Length: 251
Image 1 (cartoon, rainbow, N blue to C red):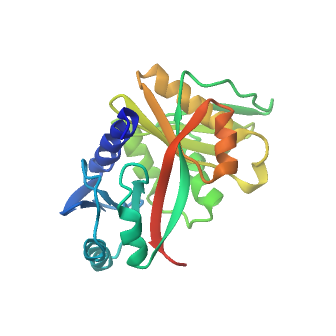
Image 2: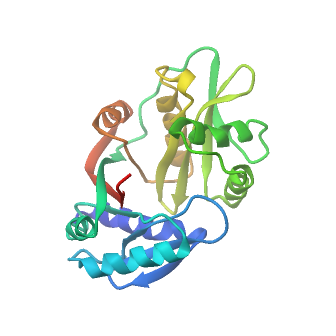
Image 3: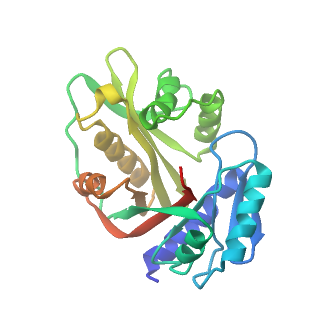
C-alpha cells in the first residue's frame, strides 16, 4: 500500500466519526449516523488489508437491516483487495469509481459571465438553494433537515460549501469539501439538469480546491462517477491512483 493510500484510509476512518458512532465487526467497521442526515456505510477497519469472509459481511448486513439503514459498503480496491469477493458472495453488487488525487494547486476554470462561483458561508442567503442542488442533481428526494444540518457542519468547520450562483441568487451547481487535518475530500458536486454542460461543476470543484489549499490542506481527493467524469477532473490536475468501490444490493 502506498503512503497516499494509507493517508486516505486514515481519513476515511476519521471523517464519519464527527456525526456517527463506529460499531466494530472484526475486520469491518459500521458507521451509524447519529441523528438525521445521509446514512453512512461499513468499510474495512483501519489497518485491515487482508481477507474478509462472507459471514462477517453477512453479520454487518444483518445489523444494517436491524437499524433500518442501507446495506452499503465502501472501500478502496488496492487497499483491501480481499473484501470484494466476500461482498459479492453475500449478494451485493459492486460499483467501481476512479479514485483521484490532485497534485499542485489545480488549474483555473473559465466561468460563464452570468454566473459567480464562490464559497457559501452559514449565513449566506444562497445556502438553501445550494443545499438543494445535490438532491436535484442526483434525483434524490430532498431532506427537510438538509439546510440546518449543512449550516451546522459549516459552522463547526466540518464542511466547506461552494456554489455557482446566477444573477437571481439561485445556486445552479454546488459541491463540498470535508477537511480533516491536512486531508480533504471533494464530495456531492452536482449541477441542476438545466444548467449542465456549462462547466459549472468543474468551476465549483476548482473553488473548493482553492479554498482547501488556502486552509493548509495538503491532500485533496475525490471519487469520480466514471471514467468520462474522471477525464473532466483530469483537466483540473486530478490523477487516478486507485479504484473506490461501493457495494449495495441489486436494484
